[in-house]
Length: 296
Picture (cartoon, rainbow, N blue to C red):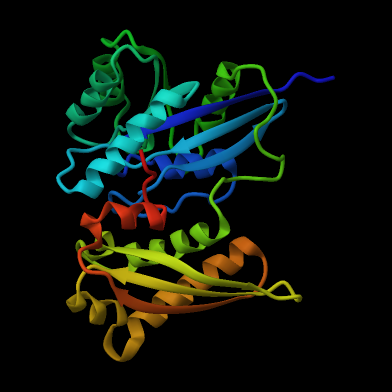
């Protein structure tokens, strides 16, 4: 009988470091939503990848930053908690940034926890600068290995993946071979729509919304009918989501539907509406009910 290996890998880093892009690249399919805006990932999402006899369970975590609101504090707490349960921790750093103090702060917060340092977006910076950044992080004895990659193009990602496989403990796989995420379909569909909110709307409004899949109907021909509520925190935000003569919500719906159809491989009928839940970001019971952060 062939031996199997399986383990959890927590991917930590600042907002917009490229954590979700890296998870999607290793998995080979979209399991986490991606946008050029920070704080896109709110909940802990597992991406599941297989290489030969090894199953990698990648934990895509919310970006770590200095939080102010209770929801933000809960998201950062979720990220750090993921490192405690993982077999291996990856610190992903956007090498194209000018300042790295927040990433240094993450290392200090993790204490003696061994880390794999991954410098991302290396295709955007000068090699001499890259070596200096690597040297600055080398002072931490917790860093056992350093990789330089571009999560977007895939350069260097397979070398990192091969190394992660070697770090995994022997044991049976936790998930079926064809499963690529632990996210229920209802939450997955809500994330796809929320991605469009982040991409289509400006300023901070997308961060004061969440999407709830209220109904999911599967038909014999393979098509699915999905009804979702876009929840906002104030009544004044509702017309912004709708847009003039409903054009904004129609655009969000169309783009989300096309993305779902592409990923599901069958027709999707998507119905969106907007509802107001006053100051939902300050109500922990709503976060947990919406699956944004877990309790505890």
